[in-house]
Length: 589
Image 1 (cartoon, rainbow, N blue to C red):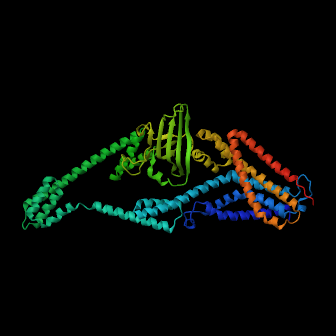
Image 2: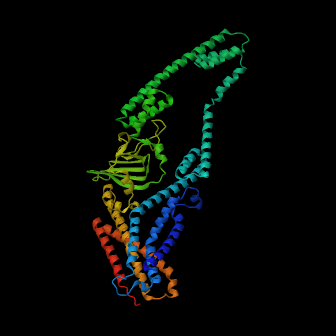
């Protein structure tokens, strides 16, 4: 077998061992506490398992290639297969170097482009699994406490994040059934009239006709025509002879009931028409005044509940909804997406103008098909000349990006316009207030840029190399420190190029060991092979630490372009040094 073939066999065997080890470690890498959670559908999916497997494998890939070089050229390859000593480059190695270069290209593509995408997907899936698991646990607790509506909402969230399971379906049906039973009980209790009102009619059976007629006259004088009609009718039924006075009271009460019904209907029609005019005027003024648009929405909502078939209401209600969605969003929609995976702990400079700086802090950002939702926003606007006196300081629990605006005013889908529910409008800490705030901020950056580049150093690991190269300029616009971006870019390039140094260094180290034992090494030396692998693992780990330290030092001391040049020169020097060491190996055959 050729040198290249032997090297491929050793590399393949070590790669298989690395894959098996990664497959064992994947469940521990995910945010899952028990196998039952994994198997229940609230945890690891096949796609995420595969991504985690590949990520762990490529993390160990430099160690695998270095170990393959050491073991192959120290134990497997014969000196006679390499060639005579003293040549510029050992004749049996060029094809192996081609293989190393190909592996380095694959590793570089993974580290530079695909690994960040895989890391981001894994982080989102871990967040999804954690959220779905916490949701079903909290729902079980709320069911025991009798909060059926809250338990139902959490179970719906769990089933939207995780695969459907019999346990979640059973709990959801239990919560929904208990909630509906409670609502029916409350509705029945409301429909039941007061006990005292029932007794006055029940006691009528024990009264004489004269008493019934007297009671009817009393109710007629009080304006209770329905009760007067009832008692006059009972008086006629209980009287042994026709009573004209009871017939007169019955007829008068009936006429009053019919006349009052017509008057009430006319009054209701007039009131409905006036409310419709007021709602329409609010709709017209809402094109210029956001608060009037919100008022129009709630007024038309009330009109729809009262008379859903009214042609004017049916014609303008959709227009009012479209108008309010241009300046606000629904609290219920924002809450429904709050626990979805997204980006957290974002900070960015939104505006930088002469005499004005505006910084926005976001606790959590979720991007969905229904919109981009911001949670836990804090806005600080100040004049750099007087930083201790902010021009504006507010906090809003919800926000939604709409084109180039950040909407901070939320409305309830159902509810009164005057409802003072916390969370629908921002809370102002310093200067300004809801009355002089139009409910939105102008965004100077795209949501994509904010999500990908506003997270600070912790978010850089999910960026590709081209994005890292653009990062310093973007961070300057976002108001983020550029040093961390430069360090992340330098570290990624050093990882990509350092692979070649490690791989060629493993071959050179293995050939140096072979020069000491031309035949089979002693048994004691073979027994030290696991120790050698362990030592190589620590060497690779130490190399990554030194690479990170060097990247931070360069980022702090030099510019981005100068740092890239120094990184490239360092990598070229390291590769040439290892190749020169390999070419100087001499073995007396």
